[in-house]
Length: 282
Image (cartoon, rainbow, N blue to C red; front, side, top):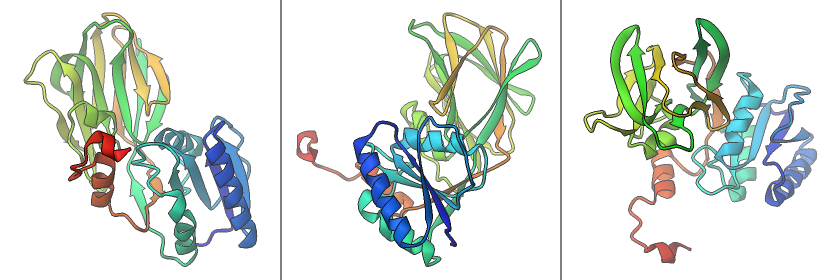
């Protein structure tokens, strides 16, 4: 992979991210590579880089995806957070991963996104694109809402639940997993639908084809209900609002860890096979 310029997208107000950003800038200077440092929250784009290096946690990575706005620039996520399903490369292997990229050995994966609209009274009031998930969740009061879901114009069901998660395969290890959804390999093309604490015990998560178009309608508003996009942006819904979700037009390009396959990542992050007591992991 030819790299003439790097944009460092770092977590805002983080000393470890600041230190690593300066180390990366020094490395880039030694390689004759232009390096620009940007903090999460900044909106200035400047020249388009060949690579975006994200320093932070998964939240910072999702902010970087929003910052890209669909531009096909590979992202390399460096984990400075806690879990790190998206920022899977450690600080210790960062420069090894970069050297491999320069030598043409980088592991670049294409991850599908979701896109959609929020419609009110027949008018589109918001458009969105997400990497992980579209989440319908209630406000502070514990009240159950009625959420009607159709797939490709065909009625599926009406959920009486605390909320609903629509996720991509990449997002299957995020909120969807907490809601009881399956872990789906990120190379698969599918859309996951998982109710949050459904009133009916027979309501279960469902995996749909990636060509499906989902239409979610808030039939009855019982307290506040929001649609949250990748945990970054929240929109309060009114009764009768319709949210349409389908596969996104553009994928996200991610640089994989050179030392860890997907199953190793699952074992590491979810502590599969770890028999240590919680106090022994500290």
